[in-house]
Image 1 (cartoon, one colour):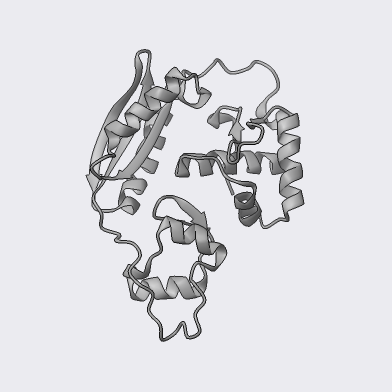
Image 2 (cartoon, one colour):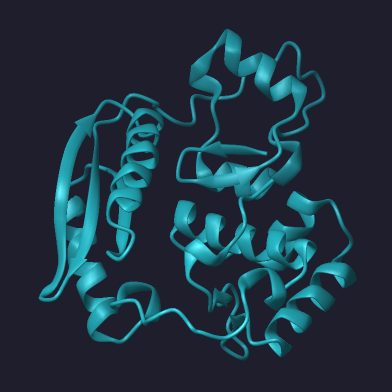
Length: 229
């Protein structure tokens, strides 16, 4: 499973990885990654001799930030600038884990964006605040842990992996996964994923908006989820 520009999760082929190692300019954009899916590269009559166009410039100025939810709303704790998203994501992943471990009672989020005329970390902050004011549970003060059953008694190890994937995918991409994303990651058939979603929903471990794609939301706190394997 690879994470490429824009946070797209997909399975790179050996041909793709070999080509990008030789020439990084061949790296695909998120749109191309979604379009080609597991194949990653368009199939041409003579792939060895035909060079695809430059699709993504890796060294685009980026801004990375760590956000925390206070009693008055979201604030930016730390912010840094980087030359590319890969470096920015490495920093926010390690730094947010450190800060969350220090203050487990505080809701911590992290984001990295490519700087343009219309988006930066202040734009992200405004979006967080809008979601908090709309009472989005993922952007509001955490409720006290339920004194009922322990997480291990709520779901099986297999169900826990699906919950962990939904949480990790949403955190990386800023939107929930589709069932097809879960099929690719767990290498299972569509009916298996669909039945698992129905079961998790029945156990009130996730919530979906009827008729709205990519609307799965985990109802447990992240610290109740197992590590994704």
